[in-house]
Image (cartoon, rainbow, N blue to C red; front, side, top):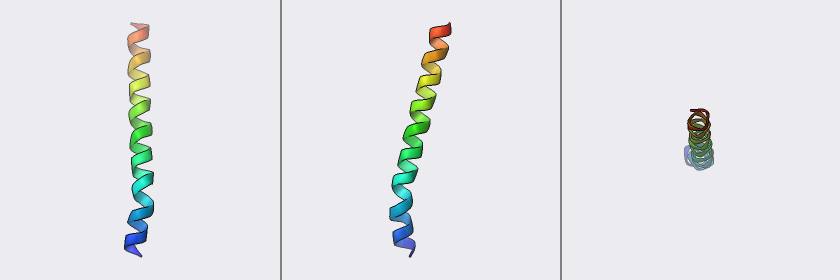
Length: 35
């Protein structure tokens, strides 16, 4: 049960961290473009 739960949540965590990283990079790029 716990092993399957960790296997299911690990890709979700990696995807969410990657999306948040790309979002922060995009926001910083937009800020630098405005400046």
